[in-house]
Picture 1 (tube, rainbow, N blue to C red):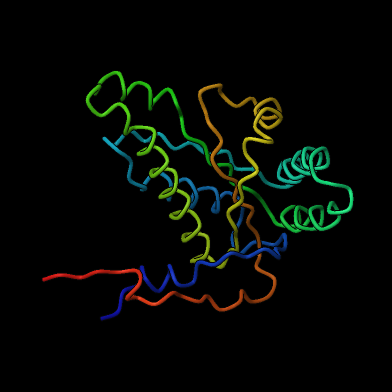
Picture 2 (picture 1 turned 90 degrees about the vertical axis):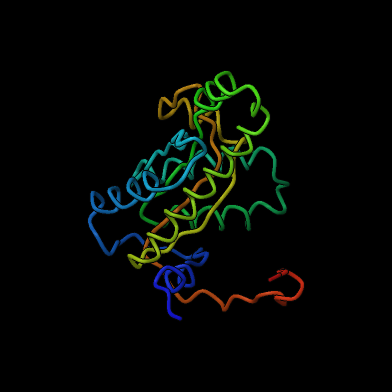
Length: 199
């Protein structure tokens, strides 16, 4: 049995070496990202996921903010490797900042008190599905990406720079661009250790 979704998922890999040219104009890439998030599932159709999409100088500014924050906490003898890694993200075309709107989560907790403790968990699951949807859609358009987590270290500076609403909680950063080089083969653990099938 063949399945186009699985073939596309197989193509989704962590691409750390990125170039600036894209396979499509930025407005088309933006539409692709927005549609991927729009179509992602969320608990009670809450649509709690939010995104900030940065290109060009704004994208590079994000990674300068990240570098400046890391410089304050990474030991000097280890900083060169850290700086090189961040520079590889900045050399891409853009970055998606993934957020969850906590006001939406709180509203659901108040409306459905019986499930209150579950809504923050479901919000994280919604965010993860949005991230995978965007990552897979980018891969299908021959755009490389990786998923990074420099939150909460950069949260305040990013919120100030791009006037992010206070209720938006930063969950991940996805630098993207033209993939330079081939990602290494992905290995998988033995199915017997991972799956149980009955019936």
